[in-house]
Amino acid sequence: MANNPNAVGKRSQEESLRTQNRILDKAEHLFSRLGFGGVSMREIGKAAGVHHHTIQHHYGSKEELYETVLNRWDHKVQELLVEAMGEEPNFEEAIKIVVEQLFDFMLEKRDWVALTARAAIGAGQPGRMRLKQESWVQFMDDNLRDYKTGGLGLDLGMLMITVEGLLNNHILAEKHYRDLYGKTLDDPELRSRTKEHLKKVLSALVVT
Image 1 (tube, rainbow, N blue to C red):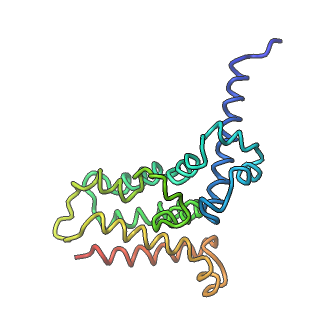
Image 2: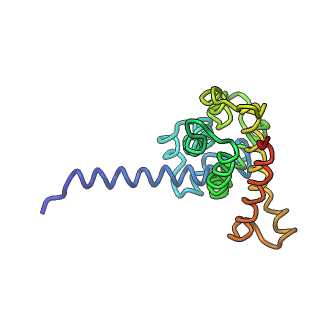
Image 3: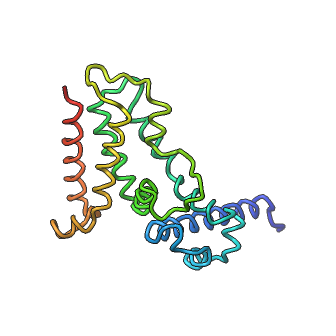
């Protein structure tokens, strides 16, 4: 029986996608730990099990790879935020939804959270490179500025920066959790307690 060229092509595309995702995963981890200048393309290639020329084939330069990794999950975060806000958001309910959904996502993507936190303060990134403005805070400012806060007197951008800061701090505070509770947020019970705490703290900001 002759080989199906469509099936072969599909397998090739799937293998290419798996390779790209493996490269991004390893680059995300290494960049988050060592910064842009602390890791080479060869080291990323070795970690991903590919030649560094394969990385160049898929992503071009090291700067382009870094930018791809940094903006990798922006669209997913934006989707979660839009879903939480709805058409006429109740901010207290929206905060609870954001914490419930975004916290778990950010915990799963802890390396990416660490990388974006470094980038936010300009640490460990290429100074000559102009990064795309696709952060979730920028997205909120560009697309959701017309949402009405009623009598709350809140600046939506400031509120989202506050939410981001609190979530980031808890996601990255692994040592503090281990020192205080003897376990990390990978523990389901502690993770649930943390989310409830964050909901209460953030809801207090929007209660009139």
